Amino acid sequence: MALASAGDLIAGDRPDGDDVPEGRLALLLAATLWASLLSIAGAWLWLDAASRWPVAEIPCRVAGLTAGASGQLVFMCLVADRVFPDAPRGLVRAIEAIMGVGVFAGALWIGAVGLELLIGVA
Image (cartoon, rainbow, N blue to C red; front, side):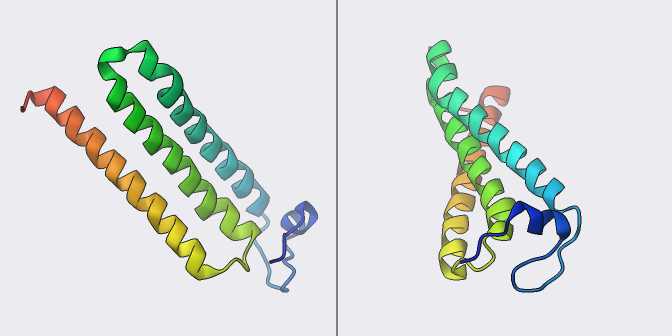
């Protein structure tokens, strides 16, 4: 597995000789920031918000896990796949699928709880 250096990312050269768009570094930085913000928000929801609002402890914890999984998925899909292009595809797909299912399940649960709160279905 070859790690691309920052100079390679800026110049648009990959170790295998393929050309890379010049905006790649900007994409990597923006995606890293996006993933970091999602992960930090998830940690805050899990660790702090749940204790601040005891009545919403479980929704806060599920939202925290969902945000954290979203951050990991964004980082894996937009950053890690580009920096480590030679990673074993089977392993990468399996881990990304697990995170995707986690994000989907968490979002579905949050949506169901939100709908229940909105319309009062019990």
